[in-house]
Length: 452
Ligand code: PEP
Ligand code: CO
Image (cartoon, helix red, strand yellow):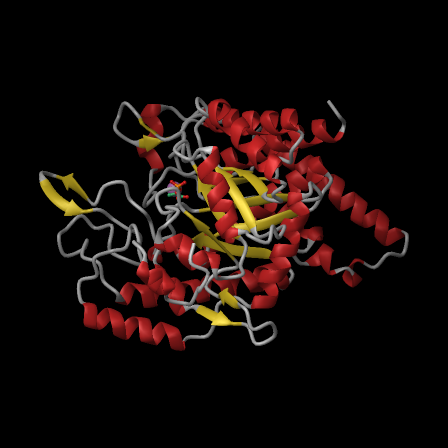
């Protein structure tokens, strides 16, 4: 690989999944405007996340990365953002309680607007239309005009990311995330049922512990860990014009950082060894996620790691595996063994969503809770037998009461999917299903801690 990286060296490579922008002059103007915008995140925060991820790689912390498949402009109300935050906080509490180690929280949020697609067109009502590529590219509206890639949407995505992040910063550092409010993170519609009682029991135990500490004279206001949380942002780094426009040199270290999110990941469709995405990402210092699906073998993974993390810096690379419950056992062990042999310090994270998608008999794109949990359990089991660290989970979820994935405690059935199916792209776990995953994973972490 050519070592002379510069901000636009990726342009000398093939960039997969870039939209055919409708008006190139307008596109250039938009990109120039983005280059003038303030960074959304700061290099110091990015380095902090990298340090936390280094702890995950060593088994001293657990990674929870979660949020929408595709954020939508029309869904950026304060209430919806708050509900997403609440479910992530609830899950993190349950995982911390079970695993007794810090949970590093990374949202698929404040910038997750671009989608790679397997097909460039689709037929809707007999008409061939360009596929939806995320709100920062075109509209979900099934019309020829709506589906035209429009660069102005990139500016809107930037501004929506900024306002989402602003609200998240206020919630996470302004009192709402105070541990003493652990009861209040319960979502309105998750108010009864066995899951809620389980959550209430954890919340009550935490509350009592805080009261006990207060009685002992420990003032919780002196410990920022108890009254604020760090929620880092992430999205798929798909649109390289946008990502480059928000890439800046850090004044402290003189290194390049992508300042559109703390962490970015490379999708399973854009990880070509000689492709533009690899070239761009090898030059920025952020933690990078790499989606690893069934088409990636051990030799290819070796090359990818050598390119993305040549210094073997812990916390730099998160391998997000997404095979499917039926395939993980055939693929993961060889990859884990290779990475172990390389002595490479990576975070292994399990995305149990993208390998488990199917069409329901009523024609809805869905996933079954049982397969999702099965892939997670297999992921833990493989790492257990290889003696490596199962570092985290990567989920598509929402705080809403949607019916997009089947199964779970409410046993959502095929015929119930249409009730509240509102995703712009892939099916998401609803809040109850997400909380249930958190409880099951926390039990696995607890068993692991106890050597079971
Ligand atoms: C995604 O995370 O939404 C996605 C498209 O994943 P993958 O690249 O693993 O298919
Ligand atoms: Co998805």
